[in-house]
Image 1 (cartoon, one colour):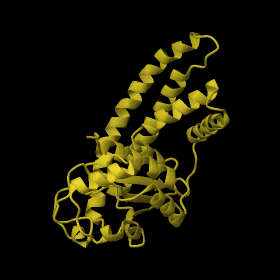
Image 2 (cartoon, helix red, strand yellow):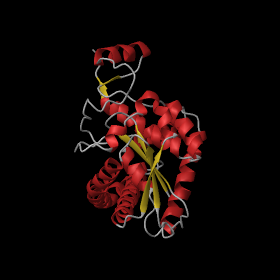
Image 3 (cartoon, helix red, strand yellow):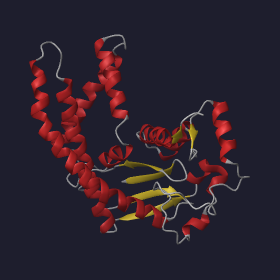
Length: 279
């Protein structure tokens, strides 16, 4: 099993899990069948009611926190019975201690969060089931709520499995120098690996300015904002370090088919959260 750590900005990371040797359970098989049937609706024109519902449903799912998708990608202990070790792959300039700190924080905060919302979604199932009384129209509120129950369940168990792997030290952090090439001049952060800073590169806290992400000539925030305006991109307090094209190349390099969609979704969410209102 491989876990990818992809810095999107100086302070936020995308995460993706590429599982291997997975034994699907009945629940995951059922979810796979449901997902396949849902994906068939993409063939309907957007002018039809099925096409409109598919488009709206995909918009809703793209708004789900990318960290939830990451935790769902991690197999539960039942699915991942054959997983004895995880390779955590990160650029060479990202300190190993920061990777562990971020993953540990993630499992400690997200496991109880998804436990809570799984229960709330279960309580809402009887309420949303009442929509079946509406004739002709399928009960989409019920099906979406059922999807959220499953999603929270998978994320909770993924977090628990990741926590188990971290606590038992069944992992190896691979600092991939080849991955760093997509960051160009930003990849010379060897100082971070020996830094005693308590600030996490992947957290929302700001990275100290003396570590710098680039060996290129620094630009002021106003210069970066002006470039963003000229290119028609959002103004960012914390500019993105990689593009969608970079992510596509990474996916081919790692031979991980789901990598591109997962990391691109995370990138778009992170940029949207970091975007400043246009002046």
